[in-house]
Each structure stands twice: as C-alpha cells, then as structure tokens.
Image 1: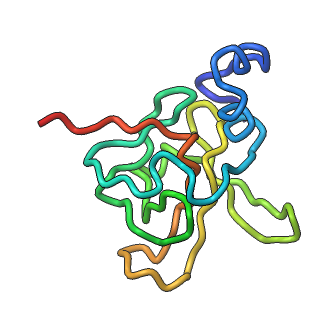
Image 2 (image 1 turned 120 degrees about the vertical axis):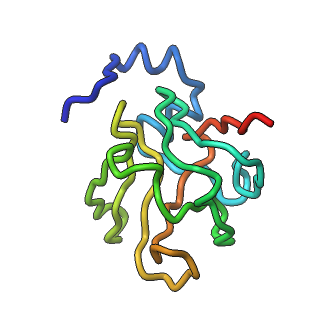
Length: 135
C-alpha cells in the first residue's frame, strides 16, 4: 500500500532512534510497563512519532493494566490502518499509522472492558508523541 509519507529505510533509520525504528518500522514491541505513556493522565492528543499524524485522544485512553497505553477508539477511522496479523501463533489485528505505515500496536475486541466500543487499542508508547492540550 502506498502511504502519503514514504521514506527509504535509510531515511527512517536516520530519523528514528534504534528503539523507535525497531517498533515503528519493524513491528517490534516495547517491554510491558516501561513505556513513557503507560500511566500518563495528561490531557492532549497522541500523534505518530514517525510522521506526526494525530491518532488518539486522551479522552479515549483508559487503564487496562496490560502494560501499554490503551485507547478504546482512534481519533477517526481514517487515521489508522488495520492489518490481519497471524504471527507468533496468534490471531490479532495490527494497527498502523495510515499516513506513514508505521506499526503502532494491536487492537483487541470483546475483552469486557467497560468502554463504549469494547475494544482495546494496545499501543506502544514509543510509537507515539503526546501533544498536551494548551491551558
């Protein structure tokens, strides 16, 4: 799929730290409970760390106690892309940034969280940049 923002592998490596590159461009996962935004309560918008596309609002962030930031919906459906992921012997749905194709995490349905969508977007902190709401 073509993305609005396309860069060579070398350009992504130059822009991103090795840890950011491993998650955003190689679909890695940061360790649980270590991410910068796992427990953040700051009001604002979470954007793709690779391209700045605004993806999630703090209004949809909830405590899932899974070790990664969790949201019950993206800002808009056209902000993210969904990819079937059958890796590691699991059936999951990968979530990518629709603007640059960077890996964000996975979305899970029907886990019983008390949210409007009964979905959990389990997103790597390192995939995001928080833009706090101005006072």
